[in-house]
Length: 251
Image (cartoon, rainbow, N blue to C red):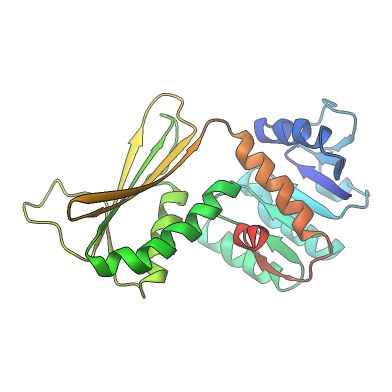
């Protein structure tokens, strides 16, 4: 059994995690933290993490980026591992997270989906073989119309996984509209589509002579990220200090 403090418990992802844990015999939310307060669930909700005096095995954070630094400091002080799921962190906050991970276990990944993290491994393995055979590599990602950043962090993580497997031989290309020339053999194209309510689609295309291999992941609900966060909390229970990722969770 893993006892969880849910930071940002009243938000969309927080409520989703609450529903998932309710059906999980091996996890329990023992306290929530939300600046809005309120009692939407059967666990105690604190408006400030400093007021939380509940013992737990891990914190899951789907809160606001402005609260991340203080939460990480609290986790270091209380020696409670943290699954950090909040997006939009600055470079300074990422550095602070790294510093805190020297004191307590922290898990942070570009994408919390178990499927996406398996995909990261698969495309790296494919690149080791197909790139030498002359296959060109392109990534196409699709998200809802309100997403602010492009390309997605997951698309960049996929590109990085491929590039690391190929000794960083690729240059990322995001826009070809300003040039009229053949595609370079060391280009890795990344394209972004925005529209409707698409939760998250990612295609990694290996295009060779007379054949194409495509790896695809489709997220039909944000529940995939919530499920991954709960799995990560289970993984972190009892872990020593360090910066972990979902790659560690799936092994």
